Amino acid sequence: MHGKEDLKQEPNKRISEGVVIETIRLIRFMKTMGVNRGYFALTVFLSFLAIFFQVLNIQFLMALLRGMIARDYAFVVKVPVLKHIIASSPGMFSSPNAVFFLLLAAIFLFTLLKGVLQYASDLGASYQVRRATSSLRALIFERYLKFGKLFYDRASLGRLNTVLVKFSFAISNQLNSLQKLVSQLFSLIAYFGIMLVISWKLTALTLCIFPFFILLAQWATTNFRSISKIQAKSEEFLDDKIFSILTAMPLVKAHNTEEEEKRLFKIANEEEARLSFRLDKKEKLILPIQELSMMVAFLILAGAVTFLLSPGDGHIASYLVFFYLVRLALPGFNAINQFHLALSRSGVRIERILEILKDERKFILSDGTMEFGGLQSGIEFRHLDFSYDGQKKVLSDVSLFFEKGKMTAIVGPTGTGKTTLVHLLLRFYDCPPGTIFLDGKDIRDFTLKSLMHQLAYVSQDAFFFNDTIRMNMTYGLDRVIDENELINVAKKARLFELIMSLPDRFNAKIGERGVQFSGGEKQRLAIARALLRNAEVLILDEATSALDSKTEKLVQEAVEEAVKGRTTIVIAHRLTTIQHADKIVVLDAGWVAEEGHLQGLLAKQGKFFRYWNEQKFS
Picture 1 (spheres, rainbow, N blue to C red):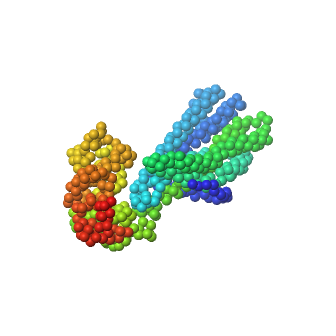
Picture 2: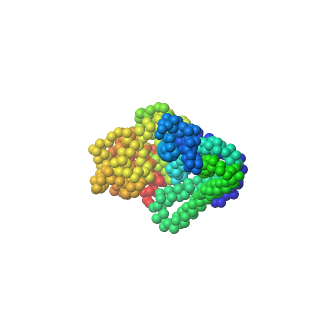
Picture 3: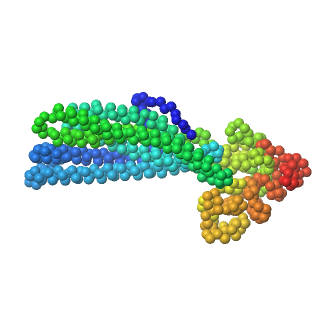
């Protein structure tokens, strides 16, 4: 967890430079998010049109107030737009009442147009946010699928989920802030243009007052980015804790550690809430400062107007509108600070996503260009060395040949590299160049898709989706499986009777990670999935370790039938299951200690002989 840190105050110059840099990075990042800049520009243009009608509205409002105060509307013939309307129908607007209702109608119309255009602009911006979020999540998810297994061996899945779901939305939502900022800047230009026309002295005074309050708001939100960065990490940690507890619930129940996990969760939860509240305290401070700014500005301007306004001055309506414009302009100044805060929140999340988009330490496998159509002679390992961390070797100088159509068993103590060996063949990890060959060609030269098409894998810890039996059996197949084939494979895997006993049969849900099935049933389902692939190379990693003796015998018969004519690699803990293997390889401490036929290895009375006797008499 991240405790309290000594957050140093940043100078205003650095804050301003940071806003510019973050804004430029956000605009550049729009391309990564798949934002259509033309569409984004259209939303800004619609907002600009809304402001245009707002300006006309203010002009007509000023004319209305002036006429109401003076009880005279003769001056409207000099007001832009109105003079053309009156000139086109001089008889219709000859009376003050007619002009009064004309002004009311124009104000209503322009207010309506402004509202429609602003709604269209906001709706377009919202659409862009949703599309950008979807596009960014798709990009991140696509990146996740490209990362090598070694990345996931070291990564936190809870944190990756936070980046995918929460961070992507937070960044995309920044488009709304950017669009509002641009809209508010247009508004400020328009409002100050009118204010200059009304009184350049009051406008100059206003421009002297408002920057002070902008700096005051920036001071109030100092260190927002630093706290936001810590809060983002705390949010990742909390999500990681939630994910870890929920996925390890059987372990929690088995060890009766609910209270301890509740205590740890409470610490993480309260820390994230504390940091979020620190951000809220700074962000919520903007509104009181804004209200104080407005009140002080009004008091100063009111005092200035008192000295500028002479008795009987006919420009009182203009000064009233000036005050109204000051009220409208204040959110525009505040938008700068709000945008800065939003940038601080999204900036640290952009950094996290940019880190995901980089290839460094993602262990992405290079895809070959050759199509693998199947084995002709066999699989060969040549002087293979492998290490996960670049230091401690898991495999050392491994040289092996797996003959086409034969069954090769790999045995040895736990931790000797048996599973690592087949994971390298499956391209879960990248092997060194010139170490694994298929028919004399480097495995790295083949496309991953064509290679995986010819490999079927059943692991000791079978993975399943929370979906139907049918979906889990046919997962990853690029062909349509008819009902007869599905039934035939279910019978071979000794699953048919079990499936037929379920109300929904092949459409029955198996639960998260197959929780509705027993260990042996899950292994048989995994074997059925492998059989449906009809791959040339079959890899069984402790495939029968979770089966009872009776089920093991039945499944072993099905496997023996399925491996006929296929190149099979079996990692076995129970040595009795590999008696019919064509070759047995004994791994010890990452190197090949022995290899040969069952009887030859027993006669040799080496390491395999000791393993055999240990299991036989245990």
